Amino acid sequence: MRISFTCLFSIALLLLLEAATARPGREAVVNISYQTAQAIFEALDNDLPTELKHQSPAEREAAWPGWLTRHDQEMRARLMRGEEDTLINFLVFGTTFTAQPRLTASQFARLPLDSVPSQLSSNTSPEAAIFLKRVEDLLRGLANPGKNERLLFLAQFVERQGYRPRNAYGVRPAWVERNRLKAYVLANAARVIREQESFQREFEQASQLKDRTEDFAERSKLYRSRGLSYDTSLLPNMAIEESLRAMQARGLLAPGSVHRAAVIGPGLDFTDKVGGYDFYPQQTIQCFALADSLFRLGLARQGQLELTTFDVNQRVNDHLRRARRRALLGQAYTLQLPRHSQIPWKPATSHYWRQFGDQIGTPVDPILAPALAGSLETRAVLIRPAIVSMITPMDLDIVAQHLDLLPQDGFDLIIATNVFLYYGLFEQLLALANTQSMLRPGGFLLSNNSLPVLSSSEMRAVDYLSTLYSDLPEDGDVVAWYQRAPE
Image 1 (tube, rainbow, N blue to C red):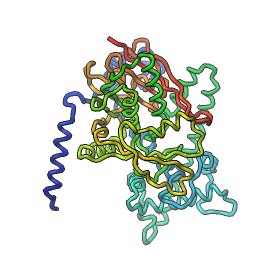
Image 2 (tube, one colour):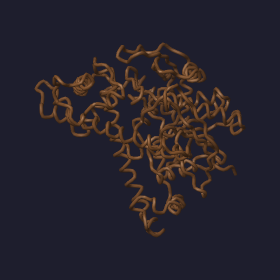
Image 3 (cartoon, rainbow, N blue to C red):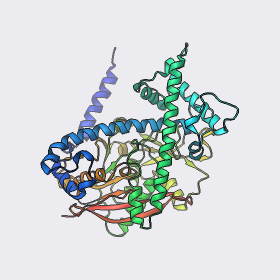
Image 4 (spheres, helix red, strand yellow):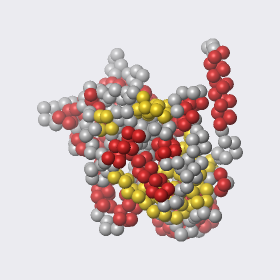
């Protein structure tokens, strides 16, 4: 295979640019030490994982490396289950593989999936009929994904699980394989419905607590047994901006004071379970939204901000790395921003949506939404290459790892939305300890989940702010503010 001189020159230029923009010596990822975790062991005692309970300090220290290894294995299993959730979200809400209408979340939740027939019958409900046709269309799409990036990924994913969609829908269909693949999809759809019912019950139980702090804390552990999702959406970033504005007004954040910021779990817009759309390329939002807010509020200066993202999901990290490489060669990044026009947004929410991106890019024509997507308003923003290239993605598990930083090299601000609710109490405390170690003294963590804070920790809960997005019930976020003690 011949490689042109132009191609070789581009590769060499890219390597030089990456080397020139790297931050040498400050990016080592290390596991949380037993000594750091020891205060958590002492505080929790009987609330520890089974394998660490009722042990002497010496026994726990010896068991600690093994626990970290098992945690890594569990995270990989939860990532796989999260991909299976993504498969089902795409099945229910996607528009690029089928002519069938999208189901609503409530319609999907009402499907009797444990007893759905393999063939349509006269007494099948309209929703079940649509769902089953969607299943068939999805399976055909997995067998022949063409250039559809979501179908290509999901086809590779089910193949890694041992299924062969191309054989199932080949010239000579393998009916046994087709039925096996269909059973796999239906079984995961039924699991998702059962899990959602369980989460809803827990949510309602938490809502009945008279103490609002307890309610928030319980909701903040809601998905501790769920597959790790990388869904992302725009609106939590509005809540982050509102908190930043309030902190600035109270003198907690000074103009130009944010030089290094980080996002834990930036996410990837595949097809989420709320407003998931798939008529535009996959995209990430939160790191750009944070830069946009910091520049709008004057908390960071153009050309003086470093942004780092932390994620355990390689798909998210690879997406950001590719975007950064293209940006170093002068290519911009386009964000599509569809919104359901019939949701009664608050005026402030509509304003945030319409101004989003004015600090980091320029408006461009959005991709036309298909009729199946429903009643939408769309807009798009072309993010400047200089903004994209200042982002450094890092492969890091916030429960088990942190960057090995000197205090003066720590972050001024770290944000994490819809991240910590995937962990129980012990894991949340470990995550907070890792986050603390990466903040400079006086630096802030903002999260829409409540986190436990030990008296021995340098972290302190400062305040919180509630933001409502619409007139719909429970449509909003509470952002908690945490600060590492100043020197």
